[in-house]
Length: 168
Image (cartoon, rainbow, N blue to C red; front, side):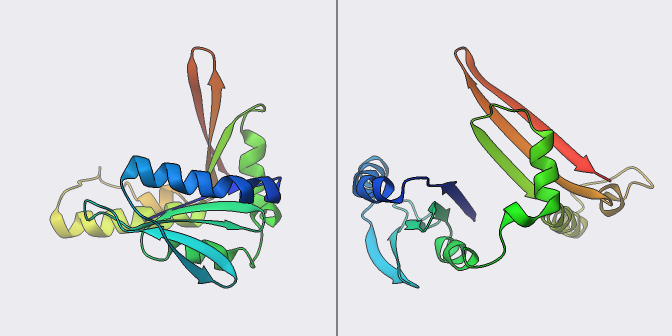
């Protein structure tokens, strides 16, 4: 599952552009979007024509949300009423370590990295698919991690990607 949130500076312009975005995505992907209400926000959802994850789009206050997977956009709408990443010291430290002038920013919290590491190790342990050097403990390696960031900067000759890991 995936959820992408893009900040919207001009809500009225985004609202005016949304029908064209929905139509374009529907045409390109060969899907038909249906409308549903979630906590006062219109969610445009579509089933995948090839049996993959369903997708959805919504324009919430200040954000355009796109999600793949059941209920991802609805979860994003619900999170909009919660704490802001802007108030998270780890998030701010990771952003500060990224280069200025970037066009795209990605962020992985330390908690998410630890959950992913634990899930991979648990899964690999069941299948025997990953063997680690003796003494290497991924959870211990992530101790003190504050988060990871990715910056993409569009250049005339292509894109420059930079990744940072911030720890204690």
